[in-house]
Amino acid sequence: MNSRLVFAALLTLGLFRASRADVACASADSMAGLMDAWTRDFTTTHPDTPARVTLRAKFSAEAFDALLRGDVQVAPFSRELFPSERARYFEKFGVPPTLVPIATGSRATKGGTHAIAIFVNERNPIARLTLPQLRDLFSADGEITRWGQLGLTGEWAAKKVSAHGMLVRRETGNPPGIVNYLDNRLLNGRAWRTDLVAHADVAGGPQALELIVRAVAADETAIGYSGFAYAQPGTKALALATIDGGEPFSGTADDVARRDYPLARTLYLCVAPKPDTATHEFVRFAQSEAGQRAVAADAEKFFPLPPPISSVPAGGYITPSDATAVVGYNDMQEMLGALATEFSFRHPDIRFALDLKGTRTGPPALAAGRSLFAPMGAEFSAQELATYRAATGDAPQVFRVAHASLDPHALSGPLAIFVHRTNPLASVILDEVAAIFSGAASARDLHPCGLAPETALGLFFRDRVLGRRALAADFAGFAQSAEVVKRVGADPHAIGFAAAMRVSPDVKILALAPHPGDAPVPLTKETLVAGRYPLDRHLLICTRRAVEPLTREFLRFALSREGQSLIAQGTLGYLPLNESEIAAELAKLGSR
Figure 1 (tube, rainbow, N blue to C red):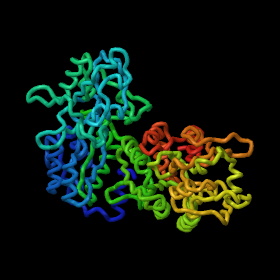
Figure 2 (figure 1 turned 180 degrees about the vertical axis):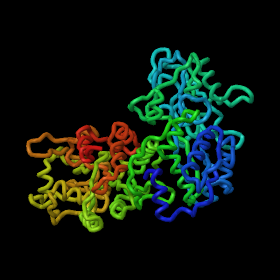
Figure 3 (figure 1 turned 135 degrees about the vertical axis):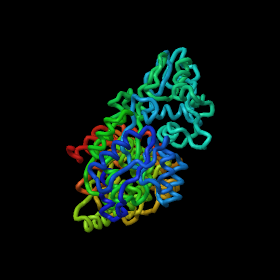
Figure 4 (figure 1 turned 120 degrees about the vertical axis):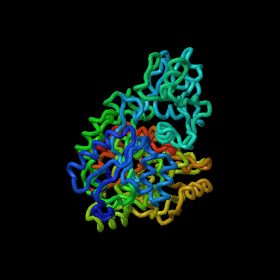
């Protein structure tokens, strides 16, 4: 849910306190101009509940302390909260911090909150990098130590990378704000490499960010992060892509303002839980068109937030911490986590709370309005569909987002037909499979087995292969694919269906011919992605029939080149859709 709208929804639910006489705000150096403009303009339009800057702090940390003491209702944050600050907020109030994005960081200013540039020496031939490459380069467990690992050849291939950055921890125990940002955006919780050349601000002298760029200018093997405004002769800033194979962006003002540049940053307002109505109105004003004009006019050259996605009313899927709940399949945690992180980077006023415990948790949550959409590893069962229709009066919309996996660590795989490893059969026609498993053909020498009819794969087999006919009387059903594979591996006369990634050395998977006369299709990653393997399965996102604008935009991102690349780079082996499949799913969404 868009945080510009969620305050109104919470007000309707009675989760705000009655208004105070005014709104006490803190200020911090880099946001002082904004806080002055907002409090002045807000007071002009809300004279009965004026907003005032009652504390002028140098750093966001001081403003945060005042918020925890109750001295102010609003504290500006020109950076992300430190882990210690999140812990203190939770200890004080019992809930996670309420952070409201109000601007995108600058590009052309020194100090303040600015996009992060990656500098190399101008003699270095490299022109672009990706966030995964930077992660491997700067993290302790990364494997990139030489420029040849980043694609450089010739004399550069063997040159060792010299990485420069800021001190990763200050005397307070907290990181510098930029390091804190990179901890979350780039390293994802990993430790920094131990041989990082760390720079600190010099009292009365140059800042660490300037020293980093100086070091890069003096060393052709160096790489370091800073701000674009700190560029020096002898250096160049690299274009960056979010993912391997993604589109690189050089970090122009437009790139940063649109948040296409992967290391853009965000400014926030932090408020205590259950803010009064006047505080709510002040925060909403900061995000309004008038408030965003003040952002554009500020001397720090911050950028206004991207336009909100929609103005739909808040649903029951908004959590107490103002996040959008998504309930469903546990094996899509990694995939949806990656997609949600990147989506929220582009739309910083949208956060997701993933509650992924299993496929069957999705349908009831979607029907009850407790989930924005339902990620699922299987289609609705007949009973789930009937229950959903009874609750909503309609059927859900179903969107494919990925092919199933052949990785044994994954939970969802394509369906395979197994025989004993000594069986001379190499392929089979689907009509023959249907005849064997339905009992329509004499199969005295075959022992059919597979997933029980009430399981997801049993339902899939009956629907896809048998045309919903009943299974043969001598069919042996099991609860788990591993049990089916074990049975087939112990019986040379057995034939079974189960999830493909449960294959063992005692069995083999048959190639499948869709129709008589067709060439048999082997089960490979290539035939799955091409859409040729007849018993392929997909990971799904199910939505309400009237697709909410936020869901529509999330699906567009998931089906984009970048979204599909994020899916492909997951560790569980789920495979991206092909171009024809993507076009078909986008067609379901219709025009914007």
